[in-house]
Amino acid sequence: MSNLQKALESGKFAITAEMAPPKGVDFSHQIAVVEQLRGKVDACNVTDYQSSSLKASSIGLCIKLIQLGIEPVLQMTGRDRSRMAIQGDFMAAAAFGIENILALTGDHPTVGDCPESKPVYDLDSVGILRAAVQLTTGFDCGGNKLDGAAPYYYLGACTTPVYDPVELQLMKMKKKIDAGAKFFQTQGVYEAEPMKPFMEMAEKYGVYLMAGIIPCKTAAMAKYMSNNVPGIRVPEYQIERLKAAAAKVPADDPNVKKLKAAVQEAEGITMSAEFLAELKEKGLCHGAHIMAIGAEENVPKILAEAGF
Amino acid sequence: MIITKAKPTQDVLDMLGNVKKVLLTGCGECSTTCRTGGVEELDAMEKFLTENGYEVVGKCVPQLSCNKNLMKRELKAFKDSGYEAVVVMSCGDGTQTVAGLVDSPVYPANDTMFLGEIERLTLFSEACRMCGDCVLGKTGGVCPITKCAKSLVNGPCGGAKNGKCETNPDVECGWILIYDKLKKLGQLDKLYVANDDKGYKKNLYPMTINLKEDAANE
Image (cartoon, rainbow over all chains, first blue to last red; front, side):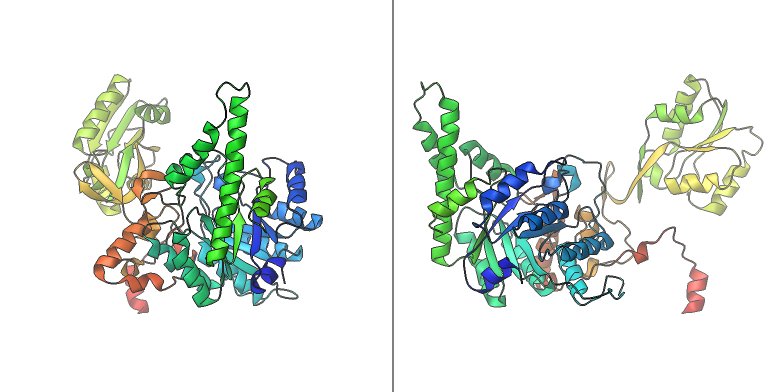
């Protein structure tokens, strides 16, 4: 049983972080991130060509994480792989001791950096969960028996609480639960209210909900995400708070640009920590998934400030 | 309706190369509607090819370019015209029908885009990807295979922003369209029925349907 499963099932407030493989073959940055996260998180997601940007594969970095002694969550999208390739990767994952899987649809290739790539989507996220469950029964998608022991997986999926109409996301969450998802990580959220119906559904069906936390580095980033990233809404008062932090830096300081960035990043960390504590206190999630987007060194800071 | 788009005319010249005498064929149905293979477009192509040193020895716009027997009869008239190549201004199917009937090379003047509906005289939109296993009965008559850029069968991804698809801010999220329609119909319960992915065995191509054989097998 994975650490993540143990943490969630024991009622501990579980923490996952997230990292992306490199665009290239040098894993040294990712190895450094592992040291920053070691002992602070229950598991670490490895993205699967996040935002349709071509990188080293998720399974490759997941294996590296296993070798380094930190538990991975293998993100698996349907964008680039047929059902055969997905089940093949799942078998290889199990052979390396990877149990946690997060099934995702995957951003469309046209939004990424290899827009000519063929969108596969042989299976959607519900189909990917089923494909994993099928392997655990000892059979593949063709109904053929696997040699040796069947693999074991701890299956998860994502959901987007800030969505209109929200019923569509709740409907799909229910289908994912029916398909075998045991834990959910949400898109980045900034307000507690939208978490409520998702937590209710999680509690009703005995699955676990982890709130997605994306710390804002600057007011500009917060505004950009809010305007452009699907499922993300940063309330205006939070953007104003970041701006107010920046405004405290004296305009005549020779390092004004750097200082403004630094104080906003620190304020963003504090805001994430406060929000995390609020969610935990209100019982609106069973854990948190922190997506620091390249600033993974901030994950322990957020956890410390939140009092974890 | 098969929606076609004219290739750049330079492409037609590149394909024709050194031949001199050219036969032009169009289609009286889809390509006429799309303005890519009706009488007017064939006239324009004739003018263009003549200006570029070709001789157009014949033109025809059959009722349907994809009907083999019909096309065979149409082409008979040009048997002795001496054409060295045919430029077909129809869809890919019509082009292949002609290619199967003549001995000279056949070149497409159009790109075949999609099976679509005529929203108005000059606006065509894709509605059906011909998946071979229609799900419209479960989705309020809105096709998730076509209207969702990822052809998702169990509901939306998280990629919609303000109701629009992540691939194109001008395009509505197909699953939000499905939701709105099912809500109107009082059939939201259908959303909760998980759709098995359909698999791709039914999509093995090239396909053939033989009505007589089908009837004999029933």
